[in-house]
Length: 223
Image 1 (cartoon, rainbow, N blue to C red):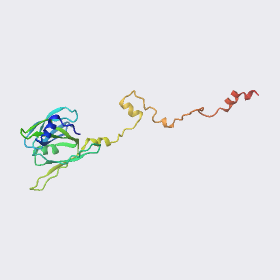
Image 2 (image 1 turned 60 degrees about the vertical axis):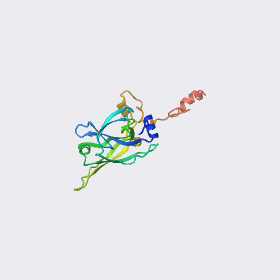
Image 3 (image 1 turned 135 degrees about the vertical axis):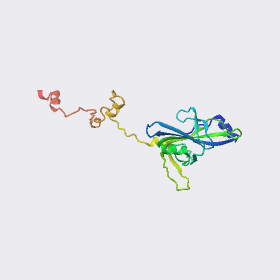
Image 4 (image 1 turned 180 degrees about the horizontal axis):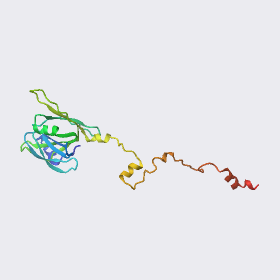
């Protein structure tokens, strides 16, 4: 999911005086309470309070992002204009205490991930406008491997974009019971189970032909 470039970003790009930085925002779950837990990283040193455009609301929010000691790399993000499902890989440094707290202490499976791009003025090192969203999706897998002695281990998060939701089928069926779970007085589907067996008669009388009735009506019995 992406948004249009703001006027300040576009003007700075035209002037060729920008340097890009990536911001990643995670929303995972506490294993005990199920409450959401947030954490963020950006591709530079130190911690920063940065403005980003919330992809869910379109509003500008300020979030705190940790330095690049925890973020190693982000794979190329497919730039498509159709409903192709985007898949990316995010690598985090396992040696960072903050990363260990995130992937070992909390439930990352199906957690939310948002990636933003911020453009900084090279002369002032100030972001010229709120960072815009480049990817919105969920975490599919977050394996944690234990490295050998003397080696460093990475955490690779496999993520899928939200367009994958459009490929899911609805397991619910059109039934009276299902509809009444939504509204107890809605009887729209009350005949769903039997309507396929109904017989419709067009231009003729339903049921068996009454030969006696036809004879009486024609006067044959009076002759």
